[in-house]
Image (cartoon, rainbow over all chains, first blue to last red; front, side, top):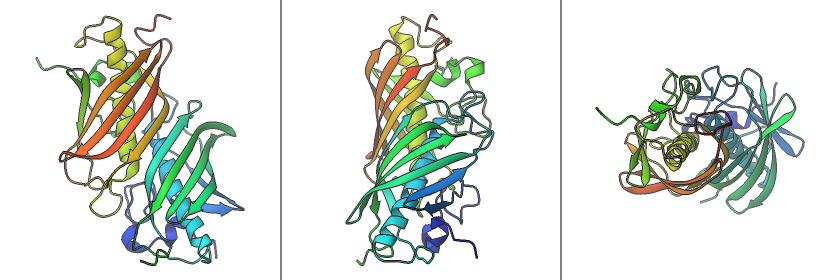
Length: 157
Length: 157
């Protein structure tokens, strides 16, 4: 059986997000996975997610970095709590701060890879650093501070 | 005649952006205007731009702050160059860095206001600070550094 994505292990009531919710039929439905100690997500923007001809608009890039970061935070917190990575439910995080540096124009029409490192898991706060690459070239770098929503799995309150 | 929005004064070839391009039929088509020394944009997210039930997803917020900031930078640069605010073509900016602080959950189903201050216009770099409010409550704060695309109007090269 294939490994479920982080987003497949969110509780149903927390799976509506436009960026990452598996129950949002109009959204991006991004999927994130562990790759060793890093987390990875691959996305292909639509042709309409254009900035200027040939390139992806910055809001799409910010959105997928944001949602991949919340997923990565959930997976990291689940693991830190001793949870089996392949079994949910995962906790749910929201974004406290998001910073994106646009390093180079991101080409449209190719698959993009987001690869993240978990910088810190501290209480209900997780910090995630991400690099977005297109055809091997780093196009954007993100850093997000995510906060676990009280009452979601693993929080214990 | 009503005042045109900043985005209505972008050259046609630079009006495809998913967030702000008037020629992108699938995008947000945001509209930004001067209000004294500040710039203002009002948007109403769709029901599918959900994070968790009742609230807007963070990527939408980052996207509209980003695109309103690029528009505000264009308007500020045009004005700094002695241009008539109501007459284009405006120059075109891309994002260097974007930082968003999520201060409170942003309610879905109401109009949101983005109000920005131009912090600095320096050469081809403009810095813009934005507060996003819903029903008078500040829900997010953004700061963006925008870079004018060489070869777009007003750049002179």
